[in-house]
Length: 184
Image (cartoon, rainbow, N blue to C red; front, side, top):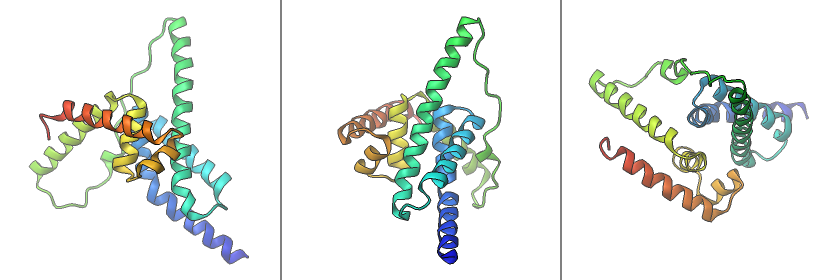
C-alpha cells in the first residue's frame, strides 16, 4: 500500500515537472505578469494534487489544463473588479517591469549569437502578437499548438464546444498570420 502511494506521488511529481513550464508560459501570455502567471500555475498544481491525485494518470493532462483555464478565468474576473475599484478611486493599473524568468534559463544549444538574437526577436514578436489576441483565441492557439491537444481535448479542457474551438483557432491563426507576415 505504501509503495503504491509512493509510485503515485512519484508519477505526479514527474507529471508536474513535465507540464509546469508550458503551463507557466500559457499563463504568462494570458496574464502578462510573471508573478500572476506563477500564482495561477502554482494554484493549479496544488488543486491537481489536492483533488485529483488519485485519478488515473491519463486523466491528469486534461484536468490540469482545465484547472489552469479556470484559474485564468478567475484571474480575469478578479482583475476586472480591481480595475473598477481603481477607476473609482482614480488610480491606474500598475506596470509590469519584471523580467521573464524563462529568459533567465541557460540555453543548452550551440546556436551562433546572430541566430540566437534572431530567434529571440522572433519569439518576442510572437509573444506580442499572442498578447493581442482575445483570451479565448489565445488559449485555444496555445493548447492546440504548444500543448499539442486535439480539438476534442481542447474543447474539454476549456469547457466549450468543438465548433467553438475550431472557430477560435481559425481566427487566432488568421490574426497571427496577419500580424506576423513580415517575420515568418
